[in-house]
Length: 70
Image 1 (tube, rainbow, N blue to C red):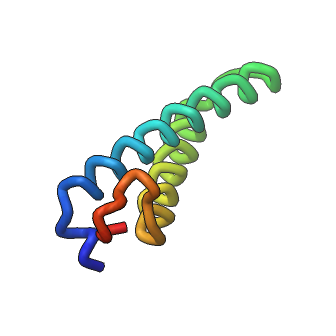
Image 2: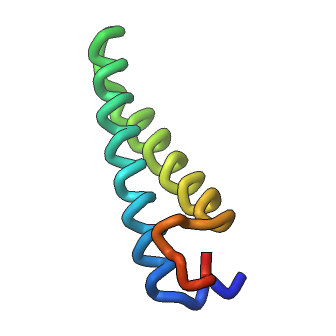
């Protein structure tokens, strides 16, 4: 858990999480549009959940952080 004290780790993990949130939002909006209408609650909840999962996955290691804090 030493990585939680590393600014480099947090920067890399948050960049990944933000990218994941954006990708999930775009995918959910696209799929919702094909069905009928965009349900913004679904888009928001799915995107935030994806971001949280991304951060939790990053605890397993980040290839971008190679100084032993991954």
